[in-house]
Image (cartoon, rainbow, N blue to C red):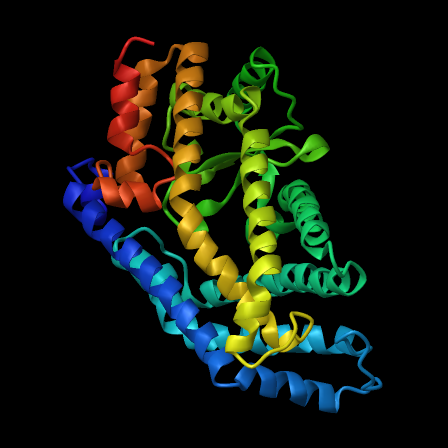
Length: 385
């Protein structure tokens, strides 16, 4: 298969098989997650864990409005134990999905020890982020009894913006070697494109993505002073200047057309709606599991169930919005650059290199695609704009 990919032979059948397996594993993992959370709640294990932590933490056990002064000790321990147990239970699906499948289709040459290192780093990052968000949830729940749902929503939205700003300078360097783009001609061309499209960027960088995957990628990341272009070596070394320019024109178009603001508004609306739904209905659902208050850390899995189920319901809507924005970014990039042939050849290369499903079934597109399928994007480029 590796030679077939490099020679550009039609990869429609392997791409369909690869994509089908990815969709299936994604569905299985989601339902598996819900089942585990329901079992954890329904069996009383969550309550047993919470009581056990309360018993063995050193702070006083005096309850005030459903809270205990030592919940600052309980929350980190509870999240740590639950995260580790869930990771172990989910490990077979995760390992097959992110390691075996990628190697089976020759999309990765990453060594297993390096994969485990990335898993550990990702786990630590996940734990820190989860701890901040969940600790804030319980703190606000304590101090804003009647309006906690809007306060915590605003905090989560604000935190997501801060995370977007920090990701290029804190998180990405933990996983990739990060350096200024060495190809000065390409860098100058990208900077000129950014100036032409009135996009301010710090600089252009490249990362060694090939150590983890053979897929190609480019990104326009960061916020404010951290905004920058990142090219993977798997893209920089295999695509022409014209192809790279039209890719980045697409990324810059998101900024130019204020798509990032629109996505922030959509995601913020989903967060607010989710917490409001929890606020309005949790008193009923808590009783189903023998719980009396959201302030009980044992009820945390119920909050997670809300978010998983709402995520399933809202995903098609969010994907539809995203596909519309991506289509508009394609149109803008083609108008700005005029590089239709480069766009078409770039899309063809990406579909082969990333084993993309070029023409998915409408149901698959509805549930899983946040970008228009490759064949639709190529058809768009061939039409008069």
